[in-house]
Image (cartoon, rainbow, N blue to C red; front, side):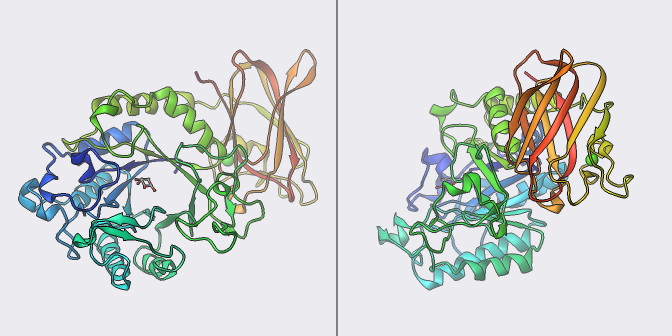
Length: 448
Ligand code: FUL
Ligand code: CA
């Protein structure tokens, strides 16, 4: 999916906090002009293909009328307690063709049950409501921030849980599987998609979709108990397929704060993050927090639109689409593995070589000088992440001259080149691969 959005919206939006203590008055939750359609339309203009909502953040306030606690929209004046943010957003997303996902904080600073076995049951009951009441869910997001001080029903104390055992994650994930088998489960340790290990929106320059998370003590890992930095690169030959997701906010904080209205990332800044996340084979989860009206702030809306335009304009046309392609090896039968499959704009067709050939070369001839500064490579990811090293050369005054080289490719690798480059021929060399490569797409683009 490459790009999808995060919405951090809660009681914090009204108290100007990042982490609510859990003792907030639910009467504070009162967006004056909440409009899910407008929010989703703005995200869509920004090229977002899905949206994940903080249905409950660490403060414990639920944006839907849950049966598990009164600390929810039901106890707020918003729409006389009859409002349901989850229902509105999931519906708006569905109508506009975006996928809908849920964030449900494992840490709950409001409930007296937190830290006791009963809370795990409550957490699952909340998740069950979200996974059964609102249609298809594409991603379930489990935060690693866990335990500490809180209100806890008035106890106002510090509660520390064992992050490895307290939540019985395998039990919860089994429930997710049975209720929403298509949903991707996110956490520091997957099981389907992993935290990249930072909140700045960037994956490692080399980034493997395979990963073996390691616990803080070097042993077993769990959400909130992981050597996070390993997520940036993943593990070559790791035992699990667990691609990276890069979460980052369009503003300094995750929630809306009036003082940050002037600190919204520009389209060019978001584009930079796109190159360093999606362009390294990961996905980009961009947070855009609604304000007290229940709308995205105008500056954020403008940035999203600007980014959407930039993205669309940059990748609109593959400048190599009409090139003549010759490869040093084509797997039989050649009509199935033709190198031209890399130029058909279809990620389900690919070029591959004989099993014995792991370092093939392919030449793209344009017949005229082509100016570009971005190269996009996509492996046929259904057959795994094969390539470990590649190089690009351009034809320069009758000889090949080296242009760039890289490591992992995966579902998407974007290579940025200096501006002003023009050539009639380009060569792609696969320099390291344990098995024959399978490349679905090759593209040249020109962008600012
Ligand atoms: C973190 C949380 O503590 C932040 O508030 C935010 O929700 C971010 C996405 O994850 O762990
Ligand atoms: Ca193709």
